[in-house]
Length: 157
Image (cartoon, helix red, strand yellow):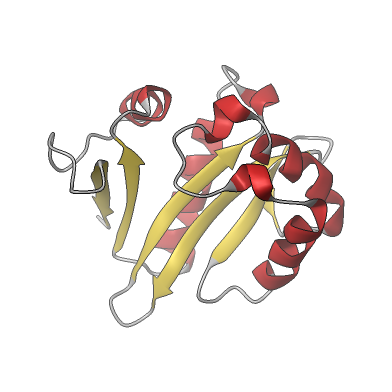
């Protein structure tokens, strides 16, 4: 069982662990391997603002950090945001990423009043694509865009 909470400075070290795990970041379009613990602390500090991005720690029943879920680029006028998730390798195969995804989507639609949440996945990222399929989501198109990304989108019910 997981819960979402605000990020805290104690999350910086385990956050850096997933950032430096080559298997975790292989298909992500950011240079996480170059990040430092100081970068993580700056990210955590900025996350306290809740705009334009909402970032939450995924934590277990002992409040141990397991990953980060986000609603990025919140557009209050369009009532939309981009979903993102990055989980520590210790969570693989445990169902915690799926729980975290559902929790942040619920938060976005129910608490924030969003009407659309979307995300992009590198077409080569088979693990992520299988994860989203297992969660019941398929890309809007089977053809990637010019950057090799597939677009996923959920509209409020």
